[in-house]
Amino acid sequence: MGGGDAEATAINNAGVIVGWSTVDDGLLSPSHGFVWQDGELCDLGTMGLSSWSSIATAVDGQGRVAGRLDGPTRERKVFLYDGTRMLDLGRPPNCQWVCHPTGMNSLGQIVGQARDDREFAPGYHGWVWRSGRFVELDSLVSLPGFTIEVPRGIDDAGQIATSARTATAPYMLRALLLVPTRR
Image (cartoon, one colour):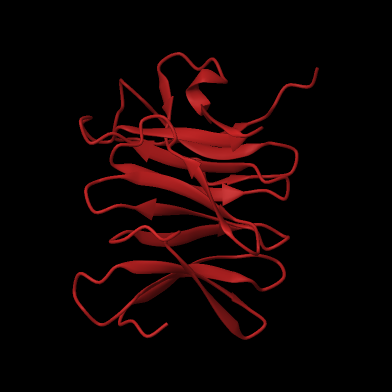
């Protein structure tokens, strides 16, 4: 895309790759998310938001892309690219400093992590986008003493691979598989 720095962040089974690239060679150049498919590169832009950056971070089997928009004064948003346009999904809870989608399934459900900069490390909170809204993962499960921090993926059954921390061992991660209950 003409920039000096770029990173691929995810790939799906059809070989669609997403990531970001700086717009020019400048040290503080904004980035734009991209989709690379069938040898063609698509610059996702920033939804017309001046001085913002975008980063594409997850792609599903249909080629829908999730990512984040970062504003110049810590504004944060999550976007969904449906193959033709970017949709502003807004901000997950606890998203003052970090709003980072990490995975999505073919149902359009997205998981990610968020962090308020007021919190001390580690201080991340996992979230899921489903049914048109963000939900904190901690509010969906009863895990006393644990904070669900960094979900990495969600499958089509709604199972979420994630990690969590405890207050008693704040610098040690625990791997979890969150399985939805069937009603």
